Length: 209
Image (tube, rainbow, N blue to C red; front, side):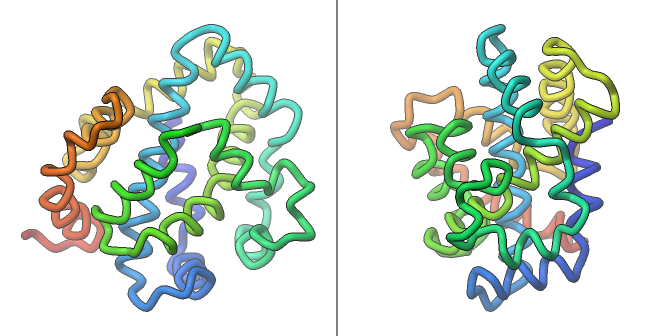
């Protein structure tokens, strides 16, 4: 199963409303666009990390240890409480820690890229990314458990998702994300971001631009 399908199934209108409220945004469309960009970026980064045996094993171990998918049982509760200090000791909900493992020093660049894509300011984009990271890891952990995926199967799930997203006409961002993750971080993809952002907004809300 494409992990994106599972994630999209969790992101109802009510959840997007809640996310918009939580980050203090005024436009749900921008929240939705940023959410799509964040999920693409994190899945792409995880696939890149899992492309070598050591990275794949590390991810598999983290899922077995901390991410059984139970955070998806009540997504709304996770978002209303997941970013608060009392729960930072819970690694399943520690979005900042998850992002540090997934993106490392590329996190700032990823936030800037997604902010430009969506029109959401970088501070709100960063907060949204921190809130969504536990959801992605929970979805991966759920798929791993339900499908009985070994390390290789987990890597194949991620790379297959990236391939499918790259081929989807509804998703113009994955190729940009891939280039960002493969780049040396010098900002050379910035020229493409604004135009793809307009396509992303149009695709998400059924409008052609």
